[in-house]
Image 1: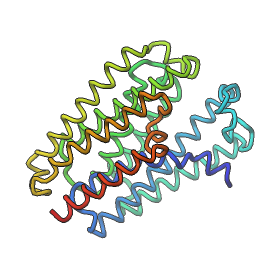
Image 2: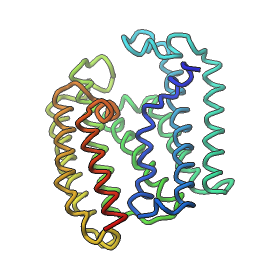
Image 3: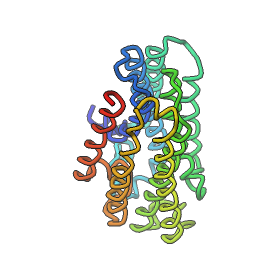
Length: 287
């Protein structure tokens, strides 16, 4: 069972918190119906994401055997057979459908298409698009955007376009930072790294970071946001700048690269994120 859990990569479920953003930022967290729908949506996406990881591990089985760290993955190490991995993948896809149905009470609607598109683009990513420069990062960004769009659709709330742009820009920043860290360690870890260099990644990383702060600031003064927060959200901008600085400090240290690793392993960043989350909650729900 432990190997099957590892195969699902639950540590990456943190990314699915984006599905809850529309619920939280729309002030609907105390709406029982929307809360339950959003939680089922998160479960549905977790299962779908895990199925994608399994497909990727099956495809990269032989290559992973030669990698210093990836050789210990359940499929590459032989602890889980390809046949059992395929069966487990199908079970996860079925569970994804069931959870989405429980949340939406519909056998099929547009919400299912978000999950299907996510799975398809990631299969294409695994089949070769991960070796195409910029397209590889674009697919990572699209994955984050799909999560947010999906979260907004299932509970039928309107999300500011500035928030979508903020998520897109910060996702580009994180994706470029991930490639920068991989390039710093070795060009051999990914074929696509031969097309990138540190100067290019640095310039575009910080362009996207600057845009993220600008878009976030514009979201804070968006009329839709002002109505919901009594114009108090603008005071969170300095805190967001501080969070970005701390994240950038981690990236520059070359100790981290993957966004999940950065967020979960830096205790100071975790503490700052927790404080920011409390301020946001108080402003949105009690201002």
